[in-house]
Length: 87
Image (cartoon, rainbow, N blue to C red; front, top):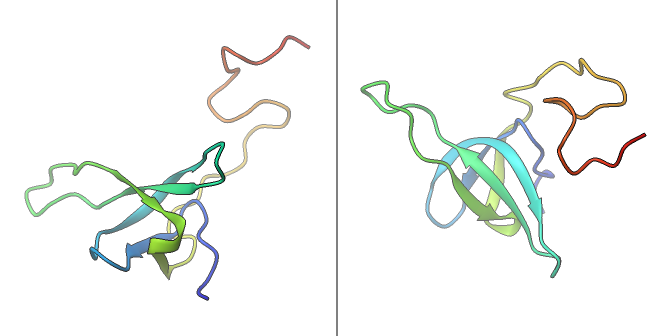
């Protein structure tokens, strides 16, 4: 088995060859785990559409290609979420 896929990794789909950076991880009630993969811009500099892939279809091309600094403590990145219970 390959390396564990994590946010910020550059990955490739084993079946389709689709490649990009992992920007989100989704866990469904049935246990299925998918990752949102954002490809690079095309040759004209246009942003390409992201796609969701099952965990087992992906392998890590390069670890931690994109990382964001942890600039928060108790709050999630992006601020308070609407469904966050009051403190």
